[in-house]
Length: 311
Image 1: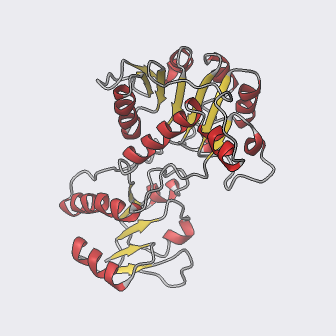
Image 2: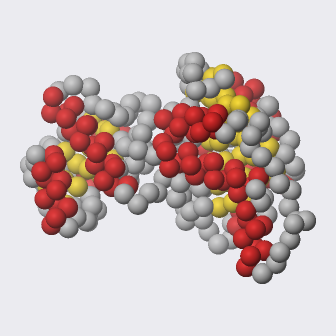
């Protein structure tokens, strides 16, 4: 039996029961009963150890998210529970979101929207540029980074990447190790941050990294807010280091009304929607189907999270 943290219509429930060849029970975060028959949980990306204790025979959790930094890793390790995520689901639409943020700046689309609201026709306002010929550094050369690298290359950009291993990848002109981050960002016109949030990546982008970046460069963060020291980011946005910043994630969400980011003229804020798409849950369930097949076969589970590494 499979528990799913999602409201499902009777038609949807029947569809997934047929797809997974299993009975399904839907649950939410407010549980009173225990569920000894549940071995598999399709979970939201944030659950507590207390919540999981309601499933005493749980063997596998699949999260409908790539980010798992808010899962109770100690509990999972103690109870030998496999954790898998939705890695790969977001590659195309999140890479499109990053590109859209770049084009908002280079093609002065924010200014165009403001002028339209004021019924103002102006050729003179704004400095227009192109992403063609620009150098792009993708920090976090995973599935989303690969999709972005492919699109950026097709648009005439020069692409480098950063990963823990620094392993070569044909989609990039060069891959740097994370330890070479300041070198990697130093010559980039645009830097896109895509790393998971772990103890090692907390405030990965700090004052020293921003100070190493090219003057008047562009920075886009669609990973997790905790990967950036926001005080250092504000400084970089005001001292001329960054000409523009696209932010989809923040250290505190929702972003408070008092945040300086709302009113900064060189910042585009999107409310953690880079990963959103209209058929998200069904896409996640297609990945879960493969995870479930592996689990039942007793083979290595697709998208299994390394609990020691945190991703």
